[in-house]
Length: 261
Ligand SMILES: [Zn+2]
Image (cartoon, rainbow, N blue to C red):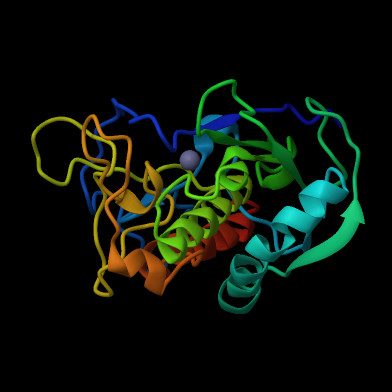
């Protein structure tokens, strides 16, 4: 069965101008939904890349080479545990090396992590290339490319080591979210008719979705190229936000069954 291959950009350094206008709460999921749901407050399915659901089968995170494994394995452990425990889809960070070439989907439910200098040819941008199951529209796995610049330059995001490391963790989890079928959930919170970068709902915990673009909705001061340290980022570094991202993944899992009916 051919598995078409799609790609998603994660704009980390460059502000992304989103053009889609979604009204917050327009697609509020209910506890007894009988039809699939593809967006809700703070989350959105990656339907534009063919992903409508998350199957309950386990995923494995593997690595393109030993450098990727040694540099990046630890960043995926926290979100893997979160999804395993709170969504119910097991994700295991393995030590396996998988040399499936770019442009080819790997084995079912494998996420191949790469450590690549400017994978999109643009400064500071990582990317996710999720595949989808052509039979049922579930997230298949694929290739995840982390921009090695975050590690090559010790203060890439911040001169504060804690904040800098929090950013690395957040972006790793953000890209994993794409692999599992989540899109950027930015919405027109201020009702000015535009959906802007960083414009996302905020939950009771004070956290925005980790899938917010740019990552977690942290402000980037114009013209400075630097980040504003935000305390909440360090508090929950690398964690999917319970109010939004995890709720979305649970609905995506429910969609898997709902779409069969
Ligand atoms: Zn992204």
